[in-house]
Length: 104
Length: 353
Image (cartoon, rainbow over all chains, first blue to last red):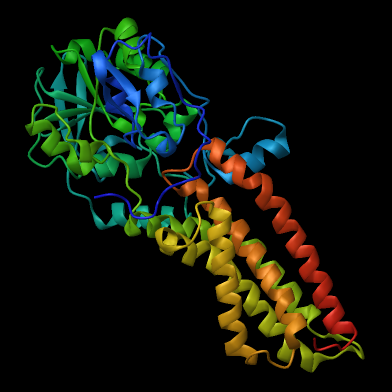
């Protein structure tokens, strides 16, 4: 069942696929939680649903030939604010002290 | 705590590396109460499971190995699905954080997995070389690296533990539906308490401040105005907050726009209008100027709170949140300043708009 109305901002993802390097092993199809990638011609995969990408980084980390790249991170406003205040990358500071609330 | 004192452990299973605690597959009321308390972030300290190897049922050297986080809610969700299944559970040290969040941080990651496999002596316990990981662990784990470094082959199981029995009986095959993350009403409702607890304290302070400020007017401070103006103002603050923290998550798919800040702004405007009509009538004695002030401030508050709900959602990207914040945060700040200015004008000049 398609998730009604739950679509996020278009045209922002940093996901990139190097089709030449892709061997079509299918690991990215397995790990993607939003079916962003799909099997394509000639034993390769293609980015079929780019705007559904949440930049979790699972595909890039599990691609054995490094054909996928993405600037992975948490899509969390609180983490971005935390990062801005501390001068670091966005971070769920809430999870670091082991007692804070899990924002994720 | 000794294993014998842990209510969810029943006995042990002998292995070449020693006795492994066997866990129950039924949750007790204590497990469920613990989960509920965790949602409301009460008694947060002891919601972890000791990392290591556990047994379910009567596992043998051929039984599957299921990997999970040492957040008790993750662990409980897994074991309650395993009735009638013989398996090993390998609990990674994720510092008490759930799998997806820990994978994003890398604590549910390649290093910890390889380390834990060696630390428990897994290759002496099972004859096969397969580890079943929850799919949501994939952002932290590199399957091909785990294979290189430990000899174990990573198989990504379904997103939800509830699909595990079906996944296992189908020969470790997941259908596409098992691989998709959802964010249904129940999922959204489950994270609402965290939103309330995180912002609630600050909002109560703001509401208290507006209660007191309500006494101010062109003729100085009057206590009767605390009741007639201050209390309604405080209710508007609380209403806008709940609009952002409760209504927005629940109505998420039905609210206009894609940015969460925009969705929150819509709820904020709606809540303030409805509350205002109920408290004062339309436009009511405080006048249209005060109403405009509260629409601006209520929209800003609900928008900010809703924007922070991006972290609890399952489909927002870092790039997307950055993009919406670039215009939403300045807009929220301007709305608050303008709202306060309008309110001050309405109050001190006695202009009722």
